[in-house]
Length: 306
Image 1 (cartoon, rainbow, N blue to C red):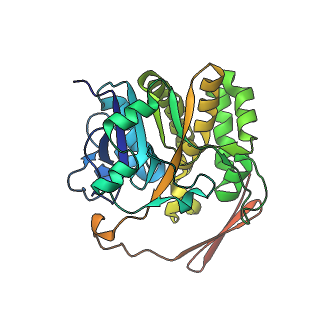
Image 2: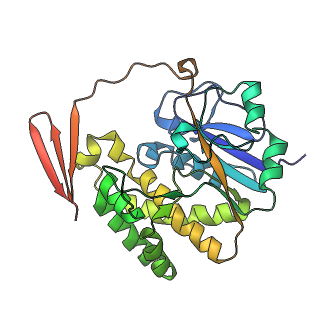
Image 3: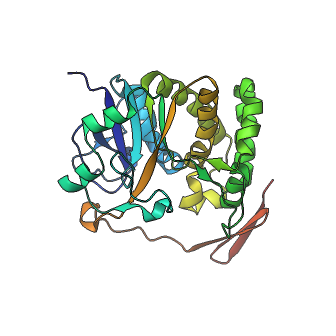
């Protein structure tokens, strides 16, 4: 029987994941990391596995785009961020307070993590996303902000400016929509979704046209990326923001979009791959309004926001 929905659980360290349909654990960056037991890698067939430090879970998405068998629905969750297909936990509370602690049978049942429940929940929808969130302005997170301001305050603002330019160059028909969405005060976060197969194919082409082009234009040897693994995830951060543009485009085209409660896994350490961490030089970063100051050892670098 053809499986109508497949959901990939992206991971780079936790391997004790459910493997029963519709779930398929997949290791991001398998080409450059120690392999996880019982988990497929994103390093077979046509892939960008080696770009995982920049693209994060998107290397698994790319692998599925190029190699996965066709199905009616395809989705991507993180190993500790899943949708709740059962009864809501606490819709009025922050998503970080909605948690689960394991993948035991009673937990799977509680959150509707089985093939039939998930398919019955999503059947007929075009795109399934986590609940949309109000954007708060860092660092205090107590004032409304826009998606554009959020990125500028959390990461290297030149990168989002470059992304907007690339979108307008590659997809000029999305120019007005891009401006509208990036100035919106709400958005979808964590880059998790389930999509109909054809919409997923369209999204993959769109998002990788943009993010691969942007990544090619970024100097990843600059100190802000070279010595800071967090900011080196630039392509993944960009993808997380610009999915909002694609979703809004599909909404305007009549796509049926439903939202689900997102819950966070506080998972046992026994399920993680145990490996010795590499010795790294201490790296300090401080963001100053429109500039970034970094200190590595006795050297300090300041980058303007541009």
